[in-house]
Image 1 (cartoon, helix red, strand yellow):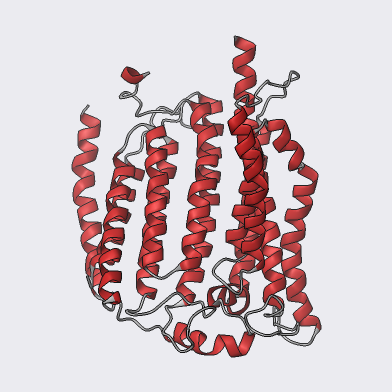
Image 2: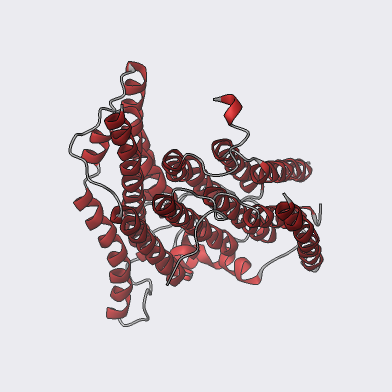
Length: 92
Length: 114
Length: 249
């Protein structure tokens, strides 16, 4: 019984990874892409846990929640986001 | 379910590749590159999993229980740390390019002259 | 724009071909959940008796594949040096320090209370890395977040003061050099580079693993220092923006 539960959880987690990964690529505004990328990192943590990889899950959780936003946010602020921001002008 | 994780890894790779090729901003390029790298983690860990196993740590488990593959997980931890430093380097290069030319759009930067 | 439509027309068949080739290649792999890797199976059987540790991923990272981890430490070291070189080369120096102190009492209290908790949690993850899931790298990133919280919940001056540059440079260099030193210790004892020569204790306690424990701590110190240097460079960029915005206002 536990092995079917594990398989169901793995399927759900991998589907979440797929959806969030494609969403991260499709989003245009860089700030929203950063939020989606952090959620993608969280879904990867859940997927790694269901794949029975505990150390990898801890490493990915630490990196995607702490290091990635810390590295990307100052550069997004400094460069004003770059191209692909035509959708943002209405929501200032 | 026998092919599903591999399909997820393949689609993530191609999606990241599409985002990298069509990026109009170097920051977007860096994030899509990270998505491509994440697809390799999914592939490696899906290879290392065996049905009915637990994580490869024996503390607190009855001895003799089946464990998943630790070699692939060690490779993936190395890969995660390398991906964050690659992200930092690409993004700081984008910042320098922005300082020099005022834009992060690869299309609008002037070609360098020798 | 015709250029983007041309790009889409050329791109979609190419990507479809790549996706098809990938799925065809993956179909030749063993089915999900059926593969038993021989190297991994042997390590699961033998690692506890050979090295007296209970976390086999850490044993693989710091003992069986210790050379790969050493090269990865050097990658971390050189890329943080590269980022520092890149970002410091074109930064302008300003005289007036900015005013960026966080004024909300709730944020200051919560952040100030949680920063040592995060640091302790990171150190615990490093220390017990070869017994329970964790390790040098995971704990190093968590410990660096403890100092980062001081910037988020306080001001950047507190962060710069709590993570002084000379100390971080020294810690990072010592971490990278310490790894090589432990490897040379194995050579001095008569074996190959990175042989496990310190005494293996009893599995499940902190005094086990021999050089795995030493390499674990060395890697943890180096990763903490490297990530803190990275955060310093990037917060310096952020504060520069504040300075210029204030000068204009």
